Image (tube, rainbow, N blue to C red):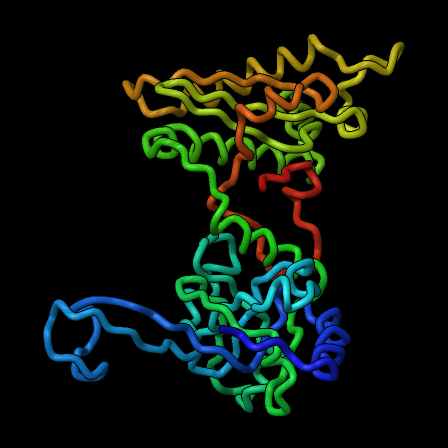
Length: 326
């Protein structure tokens, strides 16, 4: 049973909590893991029988943990929300770190900027140091631990980087599963095509109907069923105006151009789908005003397994082209 804080400590904690944010680091916390049998050195955990259940602590090798709790849960009174959810900071090799920063999305690892953390851990500039937030091991730390004099917090992320970490943390538990066959035969290939048109739009390339359609898209949705994949570009009037997809005389969306662009894009994607896989591809463009909440619930956000560098400050070309694939 958790004993409530006395009034003085409670007041101190409530003053401290608003200064802590998701993505901040805390220098306390260990991850308790329960397991069975020989998945670890049994002698190290003090048991003999291979079928016995054991538990041990996974400690961050550099002593820091990333706060995964959302701000509303962080600031909430400990009587209601007593803990912070954290995961350890671990070190990876340079190759893995560069992979994560150059678009190799992982639901388990998030690269952290090293300057502040390097200083906090006393690492020299010449020493290899590639820290990541590791969501393989997640645990809870009582908020009152923040009151301990030897506990430190650190904010290594900028505002934009915090936003990307929030999306990463949420995606770990909110990814919509699609059939493996759809991922293999359709969605990966479709993502490459759409990304190419997004880059073309951002760099001032030829303004084909496909480019205009992608440039006018505010968000992509997807629906998979059996051997059918429906991609739904959600169009906004502001983006459509910038893309040149409005009828000048009326200011309305140019339905004929949108339909023609969707057909061309659909045909191009269909041509890349693995032969004999049997998948049928449909592009179904909509606007936010034309889609009901019930229809929206039949789709899922189209999340790609490659993102821009999560620590890059500048807005990348895909973002400029209107790709918000979250």
